[in-house]
Figure (cartoon, rainbow over the protein chains, first blue to last red):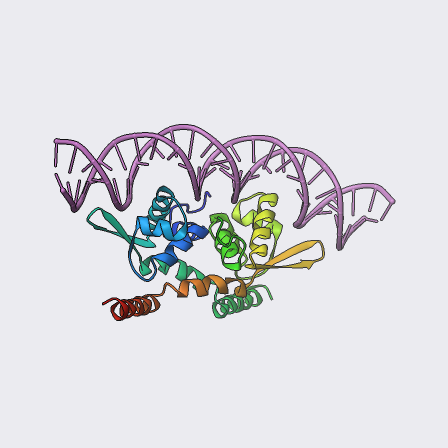
Length: 111
Length: 111
DNA sequence: CACATGTACAAGCAATGGTTTGTGCTATAA
DNA sequence: TTATAGCACAAACCATTGCTTGTACATGTG
């Protein structure tokens, strides 16, 4: 983990790597929800759910809003952009283009 | 991790959650490479690199080809499709559409 | 102010995961 | 076949991480 351990991409991917966190994202995907409801839906304790939501929030995948004593969490689409653009680098078209470029460079220099 | 711990999506995301594995993907992105070269490029031991390549291979993000004594690894674009389609569920347009649907359902039933 | 609800914070624990070290297996070369 | 290069397998070690338990803080309510 000596490689870029705190970038947007790294934090987002590590947050998404956990199944319970993805379950939480699924629960708050359609509408903002307080921690208690999320915990009940995913079957985790309040503390564990709160912890996961904090990880998601730090990663930028989720936003927090306070409504009285309740903390409402909602999905933040913009937080996924880093992951999206990273995946684009592995899109078939981009890959083949890159490979073609490397190939032509090899034949041009070396032969 | 009681939630779908062995699906394509889970394995792919967990594989991508490590910075060194992403570095490895970057190294073999343009052309297939043997383990030794990859290890030298990313600055990891042969064993560690081999291990990471195996994780990536199990996740379907990488394919292995043997060329004599060497094991060539290359990026497999298709392996990223599960992650891509998962991210699509969090695309702004889809999110707002989902939220609108939930909203109309609420006003229709409850009021 | 006292009380209940909703949530975050902190420590301890168990499990997961990445790296190292050592070794065995496979394939080319002499 | 012997030697060597390239790589995988396996165990041990250490750091990270997710979960639990306990508790403190904040916001409404009487």
